Image (cartoon, rainbow, N blue to C red; front, top):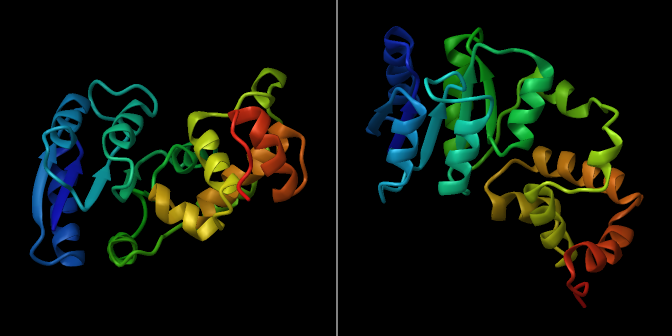
Length: 211
């Protein structure tokens, strides 16, 4: 399998190589040390089965590198391994399309287990990430009425009658992330269930609900 490792710290990159090869024996590794290198790799035509990404790469601002990878390879499993352990950032990363978030402070075996689970088609969420996703933050009034591009896509699939599990598989994200998106969609649309959301989808997306 092809794995892209993106980290600009030589020692940690070396540690990541060892962890990835232990979790995915025989994997072919490609390394990138900046956002430009990451984008060049994912847009090169190569198909990566896994991306391991640090957020703080040269040239990256906030979640810009994550968004660039998701735009170029929307279904590729993507694991963010970062020194940032702020719950709000964790929540933004997962809602931004990452398959998993593993703090750099986590034990080596935790990252190995996470990578194995994701390669096997599962997901991995540390307790602190789950707590961040469950938190309900009051959103600014101007953001309530506008769905993000990811939320619009989730709403589109929801209106087609897809379950959370099928939406997760279609978008290459975890079911937990889908549930978080659905919760945000309900809040922004002012609805309380999937039926009401589907009816609102016709107005928001301009398409009739699935029969």
